[in-house]
Image 1 (cartoon, rainbow, N blue to C red):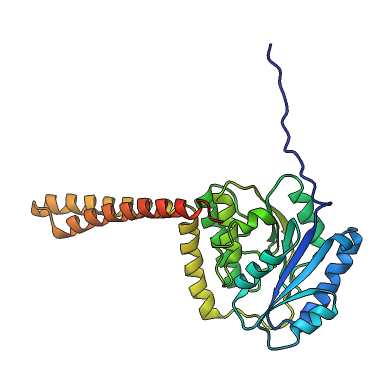
Image 2 (cartoon, rainbow, N blue to C red):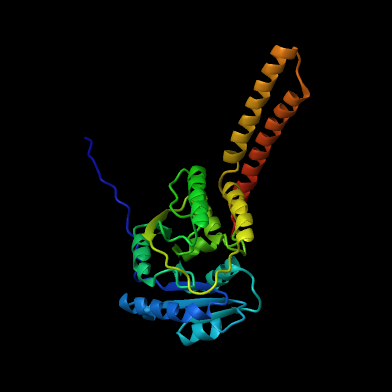
Length: 305
């Protein structure tokens, strides 16, 4: 006798967990004090102030970032010199005491009032919840267009809709995030790497809509460096998830071009040209590179701790 059952995702309680809020900071003296104070106000509203820590990783600042953060009530960790945003994230994740970690920018862009929403979503059984910036929250039109392309390309690679690949405002389960510390770069693309790693490992990722305010102080990102970063992120998306999804279409295109060229030269000149041979060879080599890259990527995720 058959019976129908309704299966629901079991909620994993977060509210009783020890929470760590990590803010990587470099020369953020103008914003860090107010940001930390707002976080403490929000934690008090959530009755989590006693079981939560606010950790500011000072990435070699040359201003009073460290002193201002500590005066506002944050626990401070210091890099003797600037190692990069990703390096600060890794330092914070290694020493964080919480079972759940919330990552935020120190420049005032992220609203601490969104922290409960991140945690509520995480409690529904997810391993990572990302604050997806809505239209109008991007720093510039160019960067907004670039992020839309990142999201589209990453969605194609993973087969899941990715609403904001590069957002630095996210809540994660600490044990799962630490599995991928060895993969994270020292630069600014840690959100991309961690998101793709979670999808690759089969962990659950969700998004909530947020509005990012205009940053306080001067941005550390430059136009030329942004352009290079754009290309590197595209390459990283492919190599971190499924290289064959990039190499196979290119190999197929080269094969079709070779076949088309051969057909045209055979009809017009009745011969097989070097160009056709080069394209056919290139298509095979490209496909084999994809297969090898796929195996290397699989090894990257095998016992990565």
